Length: 161
Length: 275
Image 1 (cartoon, rainbow over the protein chains, first blue to last red):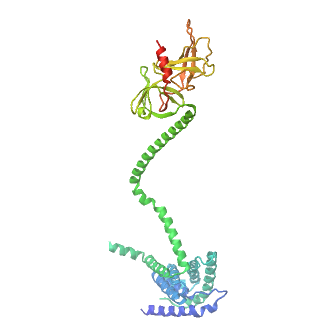
Image 2 (image 1 turned 135 degrees about the vertical axis):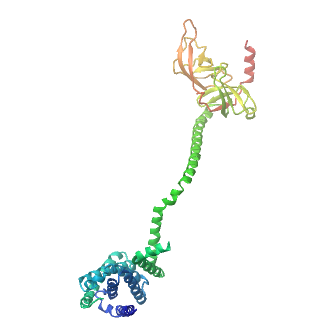
Image 3 (image 1 turned 120 degrees about the vertical axis):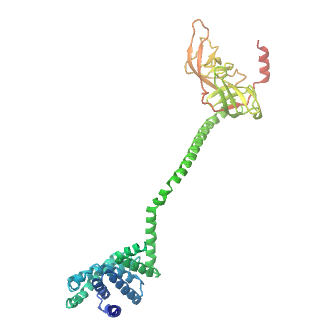
């Protein structure tokens, strides 16, 4: 119970940060997605079921805040959480989180999350929607991985039960 | 059963949970009213249509037997219709040819169908489906686009009997259209001959034979046939000329009755002069 409350608090803080401060870090309109960092972390630590659930809730909160396409972030982050949970291994949590493996998983899950999000978001919006979606997905995933590297270093110094 | 289902879900719980959240996400997305949702609805409709089209053979498979029965009946009906249409087409062609005959005949003609044939050496008659009610009487000539058929010898209200060219009692004054020599056409029940032609007269194989202007029974110029052979028996003064009739009596189906009777004054005078 305590764990869940702690997770909820972290998520709420991250949502606020994502909505208010992260846009200030934008480079050419591209911003990192700190929420995906938590989703991937949750998936690696807890498995696919919790990863999907966590991803859905995070995405839902993000939709509530952005009010653009309600339900879309919930969809994309559910998929990302599911993918991250695939790498769950009780015995290798520290090894996964504290090394470059975490960055690879963040990159893959971020790419999946962004592709789903932007492909649907740009449906019918412009003729070259596919290309734009890929470009945005790649750039966002790269930026997110760069920010995730800071977290990786933090994880490498932690113990995981 | 439920336990099995529960165990199955438990085994694939990750996918079950993912599916549940995906469905929930789509439901939430569908609540939006924006261009993206409309586009997604369009894609879903098209995709479903394609899938339905590909899988439409499944219910069709179970209705094959019923469909076959329907198709068999339709096939039968169409075959019958095709046959009738073919017949109508042929009749049309025949009648079109006959229309040319109207221009040749100086007298009006009445179309009739051959309802009965008696093509034996003893009889050689036709029965037509028109009679006195339509104005047909005895001694009226009967023709077809191919030539002379015969003469009406009996008529009731709705039917008429015709002695054809092959009838042993049939006679017609005839002329060689090329050499203009005259003769009498008659038959032995099997073949048709041009008689009373002297051996000195010019008749060749292939000469067309027509009704002559000497006949009181038949209009002039109606094709009878062509000369098939010319023989001279030893000691005979006349040629034995065999004709090929222009009309094929076996396949004859439609004829025309020429509404013309012999001139009564001439007929009466000639009758009195006959021995």
